[in-house]
Amino acid sequence: MPYPLDLKVEPGEPNPNYGGYLIKVLEDATNLTLKNEFDALVTGPLNKELINKAGISFFGHTEVLADLSNTPKVVMMLTCDNLKVALATTHVPLREVPKLITHEHLCECLTILNNDLKLKWGYTNPCIKVLGLNPHAGDGGYLGKEDQEIIAPAIECLKAKGLNLIGPVSADTAFVGKNSEHIDAYLAMYHDQGLPVLKTSGFGNSVNVTLGLPFIRTSVDHGTAYDMAGKKDVDENSLLEAAYLAFNLATQN
Image (spheres, rainbow, N blue to C red):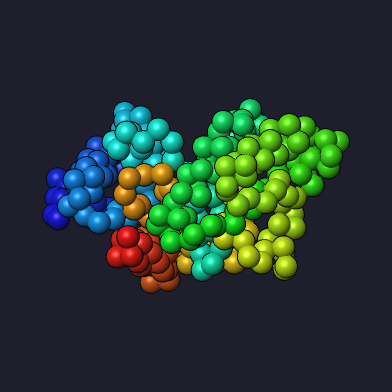
């Protein structure tokens, strides 16, 4: 679909005047996907600062997609090869994380993750490992109470409903050796707890997937990287992987 931009574009030079154009393209693509004109939506990175400087309140793709599709809650997950890491919280300051980790929120996140693994990936009974919030998952409450008082009860509540969950486990060894065997996905409590492991093992090959939406949405695992514009050593692989995954999920559903 042609989307002409009536402005001169300078590669690598962010311009707030592009803000309205970027949002229009995203909104139109989303609405057409909701109308089943497209089978999936693949997005590239957007610069939040640039769009907000244009006078448009913008926190990210996910919020726009959720709003347009009337989806009350979505979950961010990155996947690379056989490793899938979902996040209970995303782009928030670390000091804000503990108060966002509530029983209700965790139950919703884990339910969305479990449902999408079944519906979109075809798992019959996915095994999900839940990381603890504190070092050593609280170490019996000596290193924080959240793991014992909030995370563990939420896990037990969902296990009673049939979900296949393990945790809360210490994040520092959750991905190591035999600890990762037979695990279909992980739920990390915050952004920099789970994603460094995934990006270390496959940066440039990993894909961001938004769970909970009524359609398939994938995206790249990196930002706009204006400093790389026009250079020969740009790696397009994450975009290709996002397109491949969207195609595969769409054709098998």
